[in-house]
Length: 199
Image 1 (cartoon, rainbow, N blue to C red):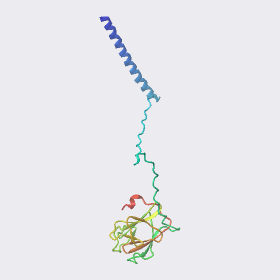
Image 2: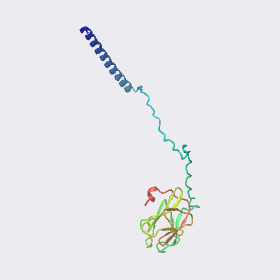
Image 3: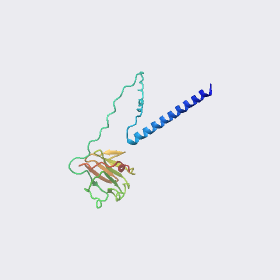
Image 4: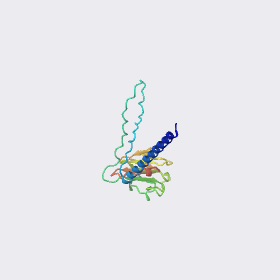
C-alpha cells in the first residue's frame, strides 16, 4: 500500500470520526433544548412484563381444583340495646350500699371499666373480691360486650364465668367480686377505639 493511499484512508477515518462526534453532540444539545422548552422527548415505550399467576393446584384426580366460594361471614350478635334510654349499668347488689347504693345507674360510654381501683369508671373500693382492674364493658360495631381483664375471681355474666368477650343483652347480670350490675340496653354510644379495649 502506498503512502498516499494510507494518508487518504487516515484522513477519511479522521473526518468520519469527527462527523460522528459532531452528530452525537448535536443530538445531546437537541435533547437538552427540548427538555428546557418542556417539549416531550421521544422515548421508547416501556415494555410491560406479563404478571405471573400461580398455577392451579391439581386435585387428587389430577384435574385443576375448582374455585370454592368464600366461607360465609360470621353472624353478628343482635344489637344489645333497646328503647330511648342510653345503655347503662344498674347496681343490683353492692357490698357498700352507702358508697354505691342499690339502684344506682351508670351510663355507659364507649369503654367503661369496672374494678376496685379508683381510676375505674365504676370504682368498687369496698369490694374486697374485685380486682383493681377487673372487667370492662365496651362497644364494637353497634354491640355492647363485657370482657374480663385477667381478674383473680373472674367476671360472671348471668352466673357463668366468661372467657374472652361476651355480647350483652338487655337484662344481663354482670358479677364483679360481690357486686352485681344489671345491663340495661338503650341507644348505643359510639364504638370504642381498638387500643382502649386491650387493657
